[in-house]
Amino acid sequence: MTNEAIRGTTEAWESGQLGASKAHAKRAPAELEAQIDEALGLQAISIRIPRSTIKAYKDIAEIYGVGYQPLMRDAICRWVEGEMKQLLAGAAETHRQEKEPPATDEAASGLSDAPQLPHKRAA
View 1 (cartoon, rainbow, N blue to C red):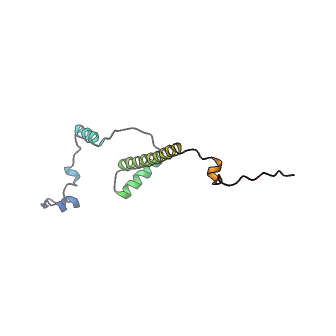
View 2: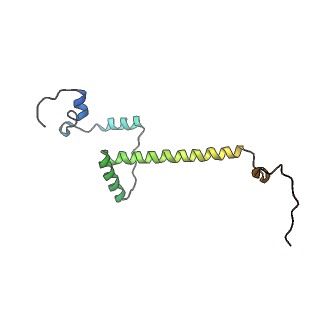
View 3: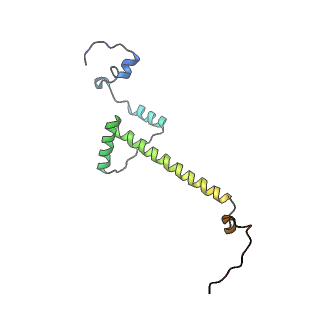
């Protein structure tokens, strides 16, 4: 990158002309990182994942232009959200069924008003 001045416009920031130089980047202090994690409700964990899965996540993350750890976090959060929806739907259905009166065989068949015919036995 040259030392020529870049006009400080919104477009320059969004295009990466400004703010994207590794030479001028530095890691945030640990205290600030902790404050950000707290504000976002994040907690660091340690899990064991097969190397092949991590490699696949890294490959996918590269295609999407994101980090593999945020991609994993997003996948886990989406899975949990989907599971919770299924569990809640199942619980709601169970609750609905418990509130309904039990169906009798006659009521379920719709034949409760039909005349009862004598049963013949096979000879």
